Length: 235
Image (cartoon, rainbow, N blue to C red; front, side):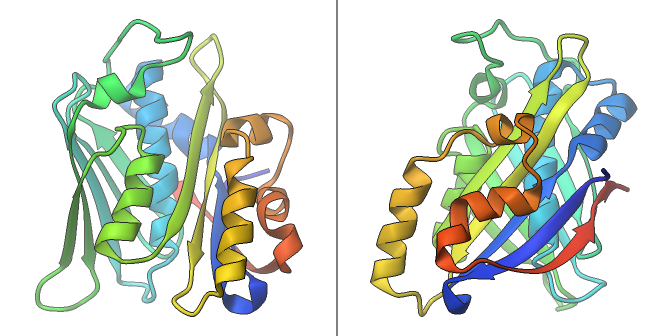
């Protein structure tokens, strides 16, 4: 099964959603840049988020760039994506190593505190640039904050990369769920309750969930409608 993104709506168009599986493209990024596990997870999350955000763009020539500039040892991270599912990216210090924190890779300390920038080149004279501060430096929360503050779109973002002991990518993927401006309060309340009880993305992927099944898990009770499927790759 290759990497791909699904686009969907729910609650009669009041919710839009994206989900992706990105194991192959994250593994390719790791190989090309000879990255440590912590750099692979950090960039892998940003690549996954960037691929789905690229899929939101309208025209083939549109380009999206997501940049994180933190004061941590990983340095800056840059990801570029387009609407065709193509995405690429790099980190400042691909060899970064840090001790585990509570038994997990310490992404937040690797990234540090700083700024998340989203640059959209959509053929206008000047590209759109939205800057927000890093909230947790875990990347998914930071993108959630960006959508709410820069685009005024209430969103829930989940991103995950799971590494094997031999430094290969075991699972990678994510989701973005967004509320449309005309969403009913009752839908918001039910969705918030549902999303507050979900597991980490990687735990679902590791149990064999596809992007379609991820969205079915979160949005099935809201009348989920899968619109289309888009292959995604490191390119």
